[in-house]
Image (cartoon, rainbow, N blue to C red; front, side):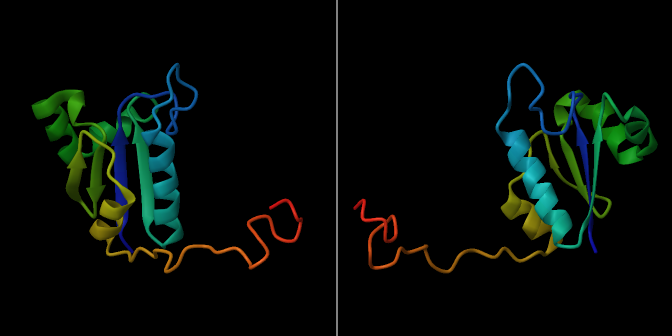
Length: 123
């Protein structure tokens, strides 16, 4: 099992949906972390405004903040190694760093022979 730890900038919550402007990346990233946890990995997420002691307790995070300031956030650490800073990574990158295979659909969904709406007769 891999441990993925995220250190976020100060936000009201991890999804960002309660702020004045919704950053569409935040809900996508939250869904990607849920997916990662469902694959058996341990996911920890800390917000600077709500969990400042977690930032202080990690020497790697302290060093990054001292060198780069809060611009290094979000900081993503996989098994005690910094893998990303300053941006939210994609699901593809999370999968690669954790050795998790991505299951892509092998075919597109198709409708039956009676039309796109089934047997309703509308088309």
